[in-house]
Image (cartoon, rainbow, N blue to C red; front, side, top):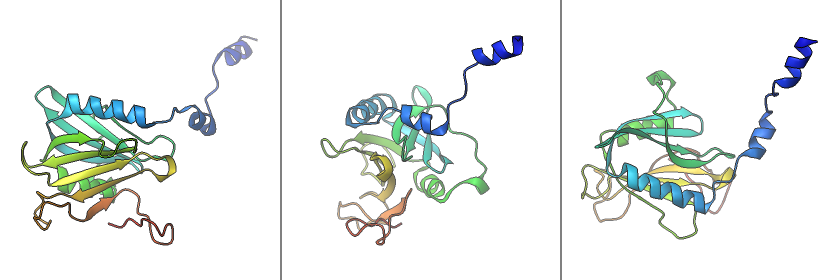
Length: 191
């Protein structure tokens, strides 16, 4: 009887479908609040490392005057978000995914100089990284929070050695989710 009572008192673990249904939407208001928090707490900070923690999450380890912090960028279909969070996990270089490798190779050592929402009412956050504060951005990390269509794209900036130097952004360096012409005729994304 005691075992039956204990089993009845213990909560049952939630199934994946229940977890997905319980997640609140990361809408424009939440994105705006997150961007404001990141701007206030993490600009300017130096990128110490970039780790792709799983198939849908990039974690940037940052160091600033107030200590270390981590920027989490996720393009998960049900839990896409940008936020400050726990430190990046330790991932062996052989376990790193390609988007994480590209971000680590290009962003490591740069300074996060700005966080913006480039278009009103669009769920896109743009992170600018430069050699030093005041310098033109070498790279931009654009994070689109759009449910199933969420994505993160690393783009060369006007301060990049690979850009044309005319003040415009360069090409796509890497993207978390590649969208081919077979999937959309409107906006294919290739790295």
